[in-house]
Amino acid sequence: MDQMTAGDYERLLKLINMLGSDSDGEVLNATTAINRLLNAHGLAWSDILLPRKLLPVRANAPEAADAAAAVDPETAGPPPLGQATPQQMYDLLMASGNVSVDAKRDIRRLADAIKEGRLTPAARGELQTMYNYAVLRRTRI
Image (cartoon, rainbow, N blue to C red; front, side):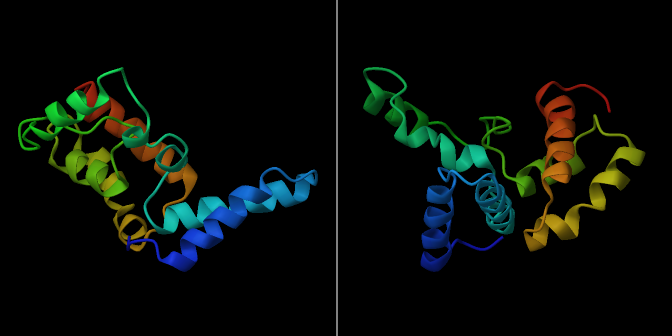
């Protein structure tokens, strides 16, 4: 999952503009191309639609940003579902005591797709569901 190049970013912008087309086929093709581009870089739609750092959370957003910067990432706990990357979810699931050996075997089969940035939307959803239950809710899976 390498960083998005300027060319990829320009392509993403063009594809996003195509989502307003009157042609259903063009919108569907643009959506598919965006999904591929996001997956190639380990991103989800939520990463581009609602970037939290750009949204004012409350009137004193600069104070909130300063407080967030003071939080030690080692003691902060796992990232929320919408902010966790596939690699973070994978690592935390594999380290979790709430994941059975059989579930870890299923998760392990996603390792190459995550590493190569070709995680399908279905596999991403499966990973997010397991992460939500095992890591965030601390439920045995």
